[in-house]
Length: 113
Image (tube, rainbow, N blue to C red; front, side, top):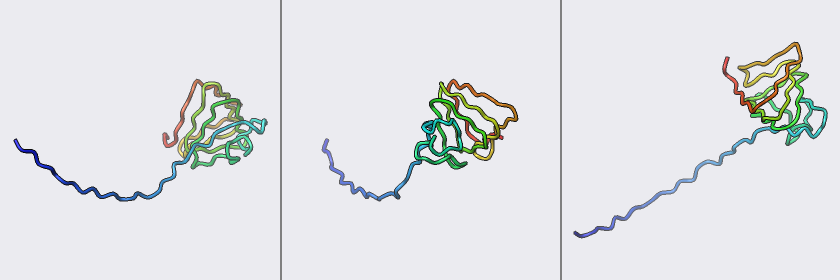
């Protein structure tokens, strides 16, 4: 049996550049435990409804409302929700009492209802 060589011409096309957004991460550096304090977040910016949020350590108090696209809470986090936390404009966690979320690793995403 005789073998044949087949020549192939590959064309390479450059794709558009893409930016993957990193989550906004709680660091608690301001030491006041407040969601609304920029110094408690990596990058010094308080999360908005467009941000994925991760809280992996410490305590976080939501006293004046908070927003996030999604929320991932680590196993050793205490989250006090004293007002409202809105996830992706769809899910709202609110309280008139002092709610405590003791996490064993939770992930919340909006649009659930």
